[in-house]
Length: 304
View 1: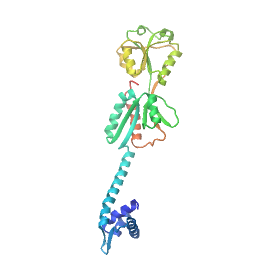
View 2: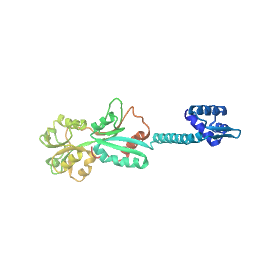
View 3: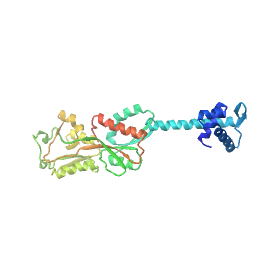
View 4: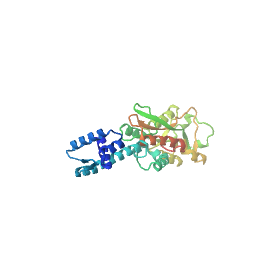
């Protein structure tokens, strides 16, 4: 017994004729007769009463038709569901995301995606970028959105945003009144607000400052860039912050950008990631494309 047998059985039951069922299924009439005889043999029951006027279902055949019809309808619905999934219109996806990206630019992107794909179940897991990468490698998320430029076997990575970072001082700080670039020696002992040193990118930032000879005094370490920003505005120290974070503050004089001779700070990047072995179809492909388009269109994400 296979799906072809069930489809033939249904057609014979509906048409009351082996020959008409054969025509509708583009089969030879002897093939239909042979397969229905084999089906009856497999079931151990007579399913049809054959006469010169065609065939009719026996009570056993009528009972079996209910289940055959339900099974075929379920399988056909399954086929349609898979088609909708492949088109990205149904199914589910788990997205891993750096926490503050999930707080800022991601809602704009997902709002458009969810509106266009109401049948897709979207879940988001957040954390620092390295933890989100670990979730991807452990197959706990389908896609990852991180503040890293990743070059790792088995991972497809695409940078979707590059943004400069700036060294800034509070408006009341003595450096804010200086004209022209500072030397690294000028920064010696200056109170400095830092973001988590264990993250590779920010460790690179602080390493660049030290290498340039800026012997800064650690005033405070914080676990969120929003907090670093707030402390800088409160006058508690110098800070390195993404340009988009401080644009308004620089324009209104609340913060002052500091130029340091011989100091070049690396851009901050945002990347989307997926495993090579993750089928690139359905919601995975659709969300990947939505993220790429969203970062190309949306304002720069202000925080990490």
